[in-house]
Length: 476
Image (cartoon, rainbow, N blue to C red; front, side, top):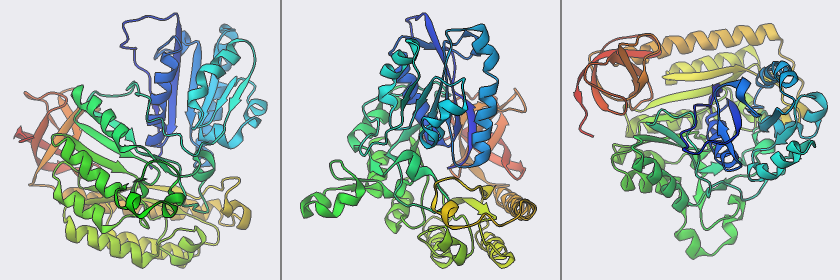
């Protein structure tokens, strides 16, 4: 999932005013944003109102990412800025949540004296006890990974929401053990959420007039519900339970049929686990968006093997071909890592060649960053110079820019369905939304409002944005 940073605070809509306030920021992937909404729900029940003003906060929470060293350094710099706040407010408490908390554990308290609270991704239900501990003058840590926690029984507070789109977590953790990735160590083993609780959460959103949900997981295609437990135990259960189990394709079908007027997206997919059944299900339901985020990481088989990716270049390209055959207008986006240990010039060229074969709509591209504790960090020397990494990354970014421009130009003269999400950043006279393929579309406001599905004729574009004019409401 792509890396971002977002402040998740708006004034609380609660009619009850509490004397204490909390402020929360999220860094990293969409899963962190979803987790922060769960945290907000838990903290609110402890007598805290949300605030978007740091100076008003009694409790500051940073939900962190560990996917790259740069993400961790961003958090450390952010923490430095809180020193003055703490000097001015002796009662202020600062907590670090998420993957960085899980990776560093008690060490965080030693390294960052300003931090009072360290909580891993599976320990948020313990926040009431931990907050009590820090308010009594003691540091508090809980970073125990769970084998079954999914937070399915907690109703998230949509603090960052536009009232139109929302994230719904369906799995937690990951079993894939890619050699460069810390997620299995920071989020634990893969487990799926009860489909009943997923449908209940989505119904709550629909009742509040939300128009789109994104089903989230580190690897959504591995979703498997057979009554609870880890995925690795599936083979041990009875044949009857296996037949009645719900995989990701069945879950998609269930959501699409239960909420026919709701747009459905999902992220992230893993090439090794995405089957034809998912692609066929997508093709059958108009409310399932035609976009797949399909991380490849490299176009070289030798690098993929060293990364412990369970797909080859050929298998990946075959999957892309099948997607395009079944859903011709499906957009595909990528994650790419360049400069992995021992990556040669030929490996890099193979990555560029693969990109030219697929012509991704957009992507998220990064230099390799060694993460302590991973298999790659233990086995391989980080032996590609920063200059080579930088140059290779620039080549990848430039090529993606070219391909993105090619893809957006394909929409010129076509009519697309857009869900209006917000006002355009560049003009208060325009709306901004996304089409089915997850491309941003801007157009003049006219009679339309946020939450409307609108048909837009595309007459111009950049490499990232479609520009058009509304020609009427969609039939949704």
